Length: 159
Image (cartoon, rainbow, N blue to C red; front, side, top):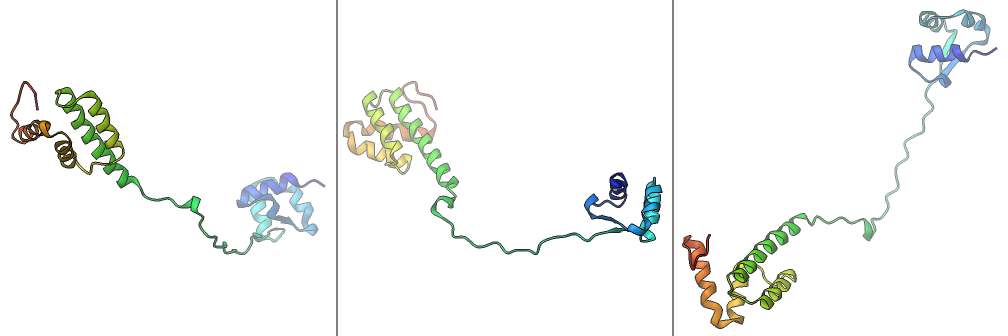
């Protein structure tokens, strides 16, 4: 006696898995004759078909494990943003000085290396360091910064 199709019909009717459907051996003749979902519902109400309870496991609490060094994720986004903004600003300033001919190509390369190694905290700090290293050149830097604030043009340079 193969009742596999009947089990599948009952499973679809009641919305459970076929493994949970149980037929009573005394009423197998009635179950064989059942064709429709309504027949299955009638057999369920007359206790010819039973549905097993769900076999589950008890909740097992997960063991707390120590967090290793490789699992630590630091929040570095803000630090990275600050570094990125300062670096871009300083590189643009160094490039501008190089294009205007106020510093040599070699000194520009040196400045870029110093910018990369985070020697300068800000643009003001960088211009101050440049003034200290290149004394005769210091007037040009002061002149350039004052024009940026006032918005005037000097020697064909634009804002």
